[in-house]
Length: 157
Figure (tube, one colour):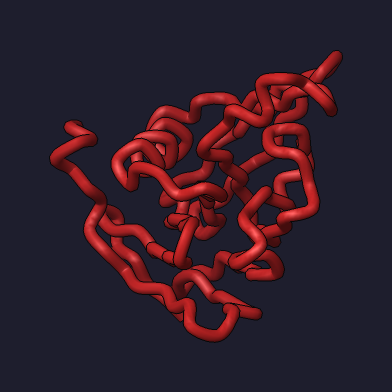
């Protein structure tokens, strides 16, 4: 069980990719703009927001996306399957009580918030939000999680 505070995130780093996660901290409606429809789901304070970087990248950029969803309730956009832009998405996000990472889905095309694109090295990791913190299941050998401060230098209030 990991217990990141409001100004901290769970950071799980593989050799070539990473993910960050934190609790929502408040109840809000998260809108998901999918092709031809808008879906809304309620996020509870103990639910998690997970940002996956399947090819690695900037922790600051991932933290900004996390904060846009958590603090500003920015809607998520779901691309149609086979959309040319999905291969350029460096960071993808899901939110809910549980998020399963998978390397067999196309980035940015899944309105189901329990599933999130990842690298092969993080595939199968399951994150679950709980009022006491964040649980991680099926963490591959050699990969661990740690709680780190939000990189506030690149994410001013």
